[in-house]
Image (cartoon, rainbow, N blue to C red):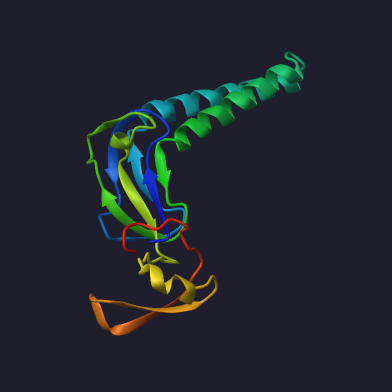
Length: 172
């Protein structure tokens, strides 16, 4: 696929559900996986109650606009924290690999070992080729190309050359 995106949660928690298996199609916005949301839901409910209470107090003139605005921000923050317990599909694609299961504990980290899977966007694909040095003058950016794959012996894939590496590696 043209894009392969590592799937990671933005918050720590235990995986409650994984909604797709490897190779399954996913639509933009689908929830791919979720953490246990009990604590995030409680914080959201508490913030909602506080915001509602403060709205009534503001109407009565018992609190300032700043206090009301603060409770609204706390509600939005709690809502954002709840959203972070889900991984949403960034576009249409496939689940390329699933690396963790329900019940696994995850933390937000840059470490590749903490990704829960890989999302693959196959709306475009790319192929990488090596050519021998003497054929370099025969290729140019924008040139049309036909690609053949052993997996699809009767099919031709059409593309356009969009990059030429300036590095020569061995004989190619």
